Length: 368
Image 1 (spheres, helix red, strand yellow):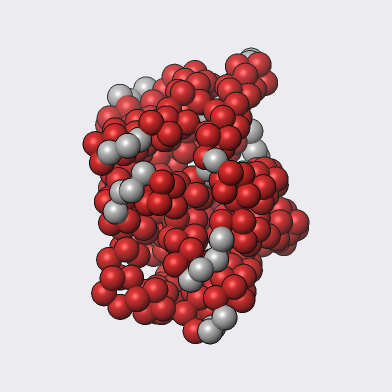
Image 2 (cartoon, rainbow, N blue to C red; image 1 turned 120 degrees about the vertical axis):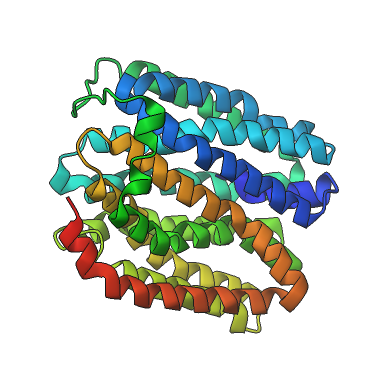
């Protein structure tokens, strides 16, 4: 993620590709990731998680640094699609593996521990990454590739002999991957909760370009985003532990309101540096909630033996939501400016918060 944060800036400024085109490429990457994720999640229900995780991590180590070879629109799309395919395996299968290892009553806390680990790693990487990017993007490519090599080794050795905790599905992956999309509870939840990966996409891919357009440098951008991760790393586990007893649906409306407040800070504060810092800090407190509550809610809707398939179905929703963020922001920036775009997003989040609060009793009753 420390690399992906700056890729939009790299493709626009270094490779000379239009922002709208970069947004379309990111959307295609996320669409492919999302479309393939349900099948890979269902396949992991049948054959196990570990083989797919090893293949995904090894392939990403090869594909990710290839952004340095992108010099044209065709190259950008080829790289984006290759990265999307590797991510299609990792997103649902890694989450399902983590949930396999967690007792049902501790899922949200375990997800928070995992998210804390990712936040710490992101903080360690993104703060210096902004300054490294100013010196040359090749260094970022090399460190990212090395990271995925280490992940591959961990999957090979650390997960050896870990058995699945649920009975494996006997259905074909294609049939199993479609089951979640016939589940009205899952579909209703996804129709509202998409705002969380959508907002994450805005912060990760669009907000750095917003900040750069306001004259802020990559170093400051990395510092702010790193601060976001420090907050999440410090508080994710205690917050999740306190929320866990009341269920994953309870606090999601509050998270949506907080995201709206963060985007409103981007739109209304006159000082660009202060707006970016304040809005991102407010968003961080929303992230503390939805980062563990959303995947726990998806797991709660999944029947036995279909955990990977449901995580894959959610990965489709999340990928489309995140992938559309930069494309939509580029269009809104040209039409109504950055401040108008952030205000529009804030209104969307307020509506989603109200709808999530109204639908919560139904989700709680239907959750398995």
